Length: 168
Length: 351
Image 1: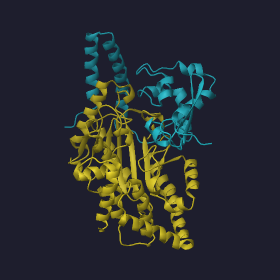
Image 2: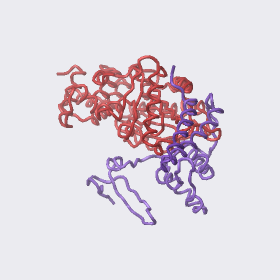
Image 3: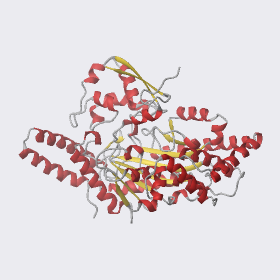
Image 4: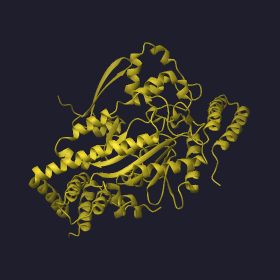
């Protein structure tokens, strides 16, 4: 059965079935209109699909939906919708859900065995603190506590300059 | 940097054919990196995005890419200029069409290019003609280490280099080759190749990467798995097993075509050449289709009065942004069709 693209009347070659708030919505698009909407056709399962499947398999869906990163504030559900994480700390915050997802996208692997940065040890200690400080800074700005914000900004700048040096 | 100048030349890496150039158009390796202590881009404030782009611009133009590196501010660039960079494979389509402070730094020979604020803070790539993955990896490794002198990247000992999308985490290394597979396409065996590529956890895409169609029988094959294998392992699997397998398959399909359907093949190639020499209106898709036939004809010695370099040149310079930049004005698709046909005749020495 052939469908017309719902946007431009060309032949639809991309057929989507989305479940939004429990409602099944079918869409038919031509390749160009699908690309314009940011829908890409990949050989690999799209990440949102993988996450979806993973969630369905799990009986602990409720638990996932409560997950939230306390540094960047992204919830697991937001990540599930967009496919992109919010900050490096999410890997820790969502670790027990992510491991399954990573194993599915990386041939059963969830541990890095490759290259390590030269300054890895020092970097890791500082990067976690910086992420936390940036979160606190945003909060301080939000509640208009400028004195606190200024102090936090100085601290962020100090640590950040240590991590990322200007070329001489 | 002068875009009009750029629009008239091939990049250095497209000029020298090698041992596998009958099938392998180019090799590319890419590393993704994010600055430690910063959120990924989707959760950054506008101010942070600007801060990242300025910091990285300073480092990239401060010697990390060597003397004479260019930096293009994509947010400020004209759409035609961004499109030109896409056609030259220096940036992705997503980057050209993105939002906010972002850019690209690249070396004058265009072998090394670093996108700033695409999906990750940094996306660096090294390009080479022919099958040269080890060389590309070696070069990108040097660049990564050079950048580490000034920057600290988000890294965890468990998950490796941390990326905005978990499909890139770990090595954050993407190895890809652009393959010309006309015989496998013609004989319908390409489906088998695509299926087995999928089974081997490889992605197959079109000429301009993600979401693009395979026009001109060009297929970009790349690894999907970035976690749980070392960089060297990923590169050598590709170099030693995956790519040679596909090359052999394509070469034997070509040999079989030549043996069993020689007249049909010659007819196809010579007709393509005739159209190239005499068309008055031509689209860029048709050019890529015809060039595919000529490339095949050349590799099988059906034709000899044209070089691979000329074909590479024609496929690049006839792309929409290149054509308009070269002629110095924006044109409608039908005006482009005419200008394109004229440019081709000129390059082929026809009137």
